[in-house]
Image 1 (cartoon, helix red, strand yellow):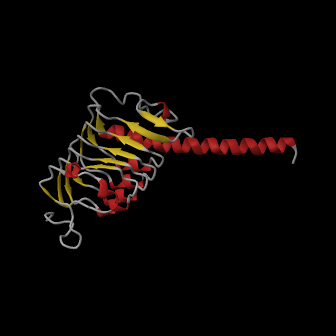
Image 2 (cartoon, rainbow, N blue to C red):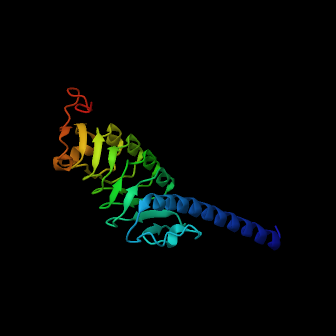
Image 3 (spheres, rainbow, N blue to C red):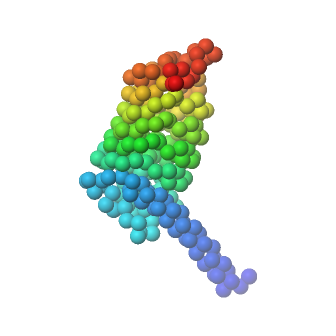
Length: 216
């Protein structure tokens, strides 16, 4: 192969990889901008989230890896209100979603179960309602699941038992029902991480009590 063809081939490969990176950056930027539009931000924490920029990696409170894929969203204690959006499930390299200590309402989107790289989901101290999505059981890298101090209802999804990486689960101070799981990672979760859920029974006596008791 002549040098000129080699140069053209390398240029083509480089251009293709660059376009792929831009496409990913744009789709992730679109997802984050959708989140911004769903939130009220009186302190202008999200002011730098400009959808006209090629990549969200220059935005404050967003961290990317060397391939310009979003790996962290750090918006804890930011005086935000509003609701979460399904588009967050498109951030396939996201490892940390930190939205604790705000006034976020609405439900946890089931699409968060698509975040296969997620290590930490911190939504504690908000005003989130609805149920804990069973889809979170697909998060095989999840270590920290902190949903305490919200208004969550329904049972603790048994799909979470399969998430063997879980080290910290805190769902205290909600309105959950049913029983506390005792198998898988839940064997080592202290009972006070489930307290102040008046309808939650526990620990679960396998085979004796339905896991969704008190939920009707």
